[in-house]
Each structure stands twice: as structure tokens, then as C-alpha cells.
Length: 241
Image 1 (cartoon, rainbow, N blue to C red):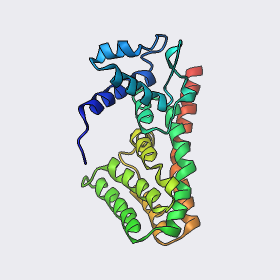
Image 2: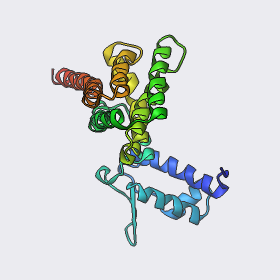
Image 3: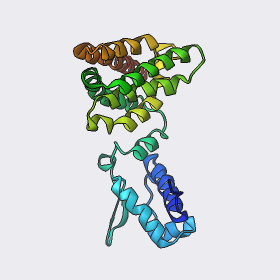
Image 4: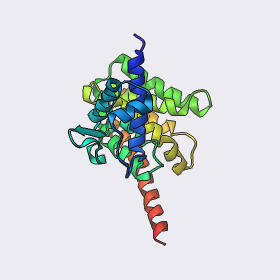
């Protein structure tokens, strides 16, 4: 793999800095800088800042038109499935509503992927699912990382689905889990996700039980979603008192 060029590195730095600033609201109520102002701020050539702006336009965060200049788009225009945009959203103050939205997306994706994995997974993919569950049990004993082993399981299921569109969601699920797992465990009053619950999903997949795999995964994610929704409802009740 070739090392990134200095030009590319500067562009990426500007994109990451500006993207996080936009998404976390640092420009709320303030005009967005011009390309020249950005060039002066970052000590970069106009070609570099122009490329950074184009990248943010492609993510739906900005629009650039003659006479209007560079304008921040409304959140409805953002590409929320873009890994950078998701990561910047997680830099905001914690939002249970955002956590629920992430989990609703997972609930719409992962049970179907589990069903397909039960039908299609090859030997290597089955081994990856089995290994991820074993890592979760090891994490319970302090012998592995609980977050990474949990992520490894869900990503392994997506990859085992044999569907390219499901596999395209691996990074989405990775990001969502990094955001949600610790909060979900806090709501449950536990330190780690249940390895046993994940094993039930894995057992159904490895046995080729399509409907059971889908149901087990739906129960796993749906249970977490129900917990979040109850927590949000309780917060709202407290706010009304």
C-alpha cells in the first residue's frame, strides 16, 4: 500500500476538522468560511481547500454555488450512512434518540443477514462466527476485548450472508456498536454483552436453521431497543414533572 501524499494528508485533515465542526454544530448561526479563508486558516493552497470542500459536498454537508458561496446543508441532506458522517455525529453530546435510530437500523438489517448466513455461510465464514462467540466468552474472563469481540460477531454474520449489500453495512454496524454497546450494557446493569445470547444466534446459524437464526438475532437486537425506548420514555416522564 502506498503512503498518503502530503497533499492528500492535508486534504484529509481539513475534511476531518471541518466535518466534525459542521456536524457538532460549531458553525450554527455563523457563515461558513470561503475557500480563501480556509486556505489562510490551514496554511494550504486553494486547490487543497477546494478538494476538501468537494469531499464535504459529496457527503451532503455542504453545497457550493456561484453567488451563494459555500453553504452548510440541513441535516436531512447529510449522507448519514457515510462512515465519516456517522463518526462525527458520535462526537456530539450523547443522544438516546440517536442511539435508538442506530439500533432501529440494525434491527432492519441484521436478522435478515443472520437468516441468509444460516443458509449460505461457507466453512471459513462459519468458523469466523464461531471464533467471535468464543472471543466473547473469553472477554467475560478478561482474556479478550469485550467491545471488539462483540463487533467481530456481528460483522462476521453480515459477511456470511453472501449478500454484497449486507456486507456493505459492516462499517455502519461497527460504528453503531461502538456507540451503543457500552450504553446498552449500562442500561442493563451489566459490564459486557451476553455471550450466551450471541451463542444462541450463532448456534442457529451454524445448524442451518434459517428461521431460528433470524428470530434469535431479532430478539437480541429488539431486546436492546426495547430497553432504550423504555429509558427514553422514563427520561421524558421525569422532564415533565
